[in-house]
Length: 413
Image (cartoon, rainbow, N blue to C red; front, side):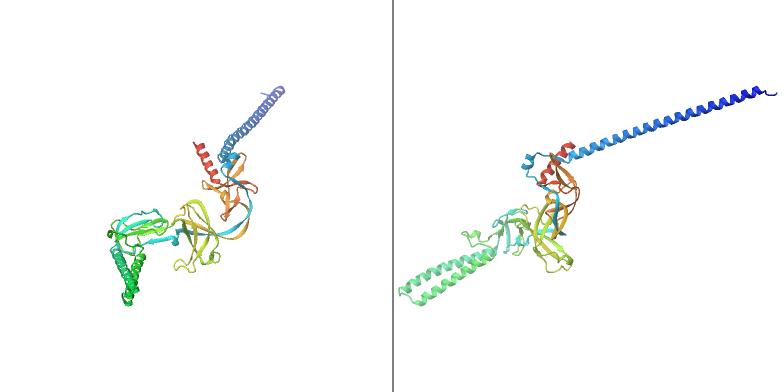
């Protein structure tokens, strides 16, 4: 069947309309998809900004709370009453320090090993381990046969001297009255002098063992009171009631703990820098206290096993904090060095294993973490955490540390 011209025109029109309709639909879908994508992107951006704001809010809140926790609020009157002083952080000269590990020991010049000096049996044991005693205080009472014999010897000598004196006085009077011969007078005089020598000899024997002379009753002739040689503390005790002791047995050790030694070993390479009279600082990890002193002794010989010399610092110990056996660090100071930023040593406190200083802020002080460097016991180098010109608490900072601890406890509660 032949297709007419009109039919061809109609078919072309239909195809053209279909192509145009399909193109319009495609453009519509593309436009819709673009708008949706743009809307989704805007929504996503807004959602992200919302999340960032939500994340930033707790962080800011946490930072604010941390700032509040580290702040100690005090008025000016409270600061004055607490004796808190302030100082500006800035440059200073520090003495270079070489550190040595040491140990607290008894001051041997003020430590005595008490021995009875007479064999006997313990009748009383008065002193206890760790007890503080005064000079002359009775530590124990010992019954000694040898003491009884010595006191008997003294009593006998005293009786003979008294008799010899009476004879001497009588012979002297008779000789002066020309009744007796001079020879009798001289013999009485010699006998009296010999009796005096015997008394002195017996007295000195008792004094050598620290025992007084005989007193009245013969029942006390064997009683020996062992007394403290000076004020101190009983640090060793090797005596029990009824125990027999020898004359050279060390039964008590008394030490005056108001003075102790900090001893440390010095290697040969450091002997040129460690000298008697140098200033040192002694500290311990057991507590925060630190004490200054000077080197009182440096050994002239090296130990056979350690190959080091023994050095010593004599420390005053009025509160008994420096106990023998405590390990310490001895910082020996040398020449001065310029340091750009320092604070007083008392300004630095350790809080939760972090070195901190209390920086002055409006209405109080803020505990500020710092990184510290060298120290000479008086000033501490600050490596970070502060800047020059910052005012920090430099005295009685333990008060601020205590207040900070109370505030933290209250906050946790």
